[in-house]
Amino acid sequence: MGLAGWLRRWWWALAAPLFAGLALLSAFLSVYLIPNTHPLRNPQTAADVRQLARVEGIPGTKAEVQDVERRTTAPNAESVGFGTTRRLILWDTLLNGRFSNDEVRVVTAHELGHIAHHHILKRVGWLALFLLPAAGLVALFTLPRGGLARPEAVPVALFVFVMLQLLTMPLTNIVSRREEAEADWSALQATQDPAAARALFRRLATTSLANPDPSTFTYVLYEDHPTIVQRIAMVDAWQTRASR
Image (cartoon, rainbow, N blue to C red; front, side, top):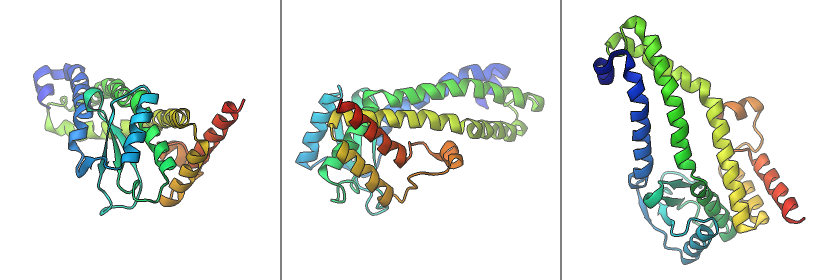
């Protein structure tokens, strides 16, 4: 509203790059906002991280452990930051013995794949592409109420923005699934261990209570990862290709 009061009907032209810049800053600093983390203490896993990071072309990438076991039993890992703040975050629920060392290697290689393919920066880029037309549409639909500078236009702005998010959700999921598939392929290339990848995906389906083959409606609207069936099919395809 402050920008709208200052720039009037052209506020959106400045707001879109401004919020994209804030998203970039947030991605860079996100590692410092994750609670309950500590350095990775398992020497075998630490050695695997170093070796896989070299294989994937991002040597020196650091790994930390996040303690979440008091809140959830679900296993997870994530890649955060970029440049000097890039980190691999492994949940302690992944390292508590339920998963074999080879399965943890696959997860590690998958998350390092996200970093190697610059997926975090690409997500900020996609956000920037969304924000510019979204802000323009918000400006257009709030004009009849005097523009976003007026309080009575705020409900309209929120409605338009939420509707745009809902309408673009299937497209967002397509991008996310593409990134996850790319990271899966990187993990297979780095570990050369299709048996461990196949075992991991099956174990994830049971520990996370995930539907391995959801309906098309659910898949299109809600799934931001390939299905377990698709991920296992990728392992089979990689193994067939590698054996030629």
